[in-house]
Length: 320
Image (tube, rainbow, N blue to C red; front, top):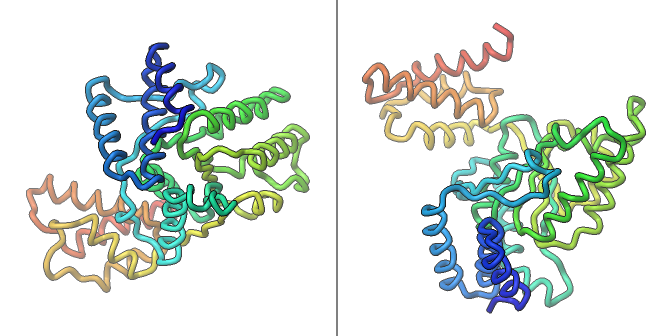
């Protein structure tokens, strides 16, 4: 059953009239019951939360005043099945989910679950999608840290905000997603490094080392060569993302077009045209083809229709 601290926190948040805090603790309670194997009870708690949330409108975490606008809270509805990626990435994500759900068993052996993950790869290859999937599968909020707003010109301010973020992690269970992580994780030996950013990185290394919460810390970067080498050993796992293979591209297009795809779809031409595009760009091309078909009162999309949209995406890369 729920821990004594969870019950006391739930009661305090109710009588303090803090609905956001109440919802967060209730979700933590549901996650706790799920980890104990009480799946039916966890399901009932989440259903009650969903019903009340629909009545009261969108829910946001009560962040400290200094963090307003720095963390955006969301509750994604993207399941693991929608990910179109390599078997290796799928397997690694599944392992994070399984270890989280069975963390009590791991802790009984003195082990901890994977909860500090570094995602590396080109833009549009699924790093942000992965954070959303983890939040959905684990039924905890996704808190995206706006790194561009986190870094300030004032001495010590960025490190102070980082400390507040890690304090929130301890109090409010969730996925905490640092996108464009190289902005604060740049190599300390780089010639253009400044003293303040070196202090920020040192602070992050200290905070992530000392963090003992059950929250997931996800960092993503398009530029791994810029990262300080000390960061890599602070993460439990590092996932490398690539642009889709032909097989993945075909699966992605089939999933996206759905019933709009014609029976005699010319895959060879489409796959040739789509070579080099990211997952996100392929999805955008499919969306454009679907919208064009709808506006033209067309029931089906043929290969030539999608190729036109793919070419436009390719041209955008050339600056045409």
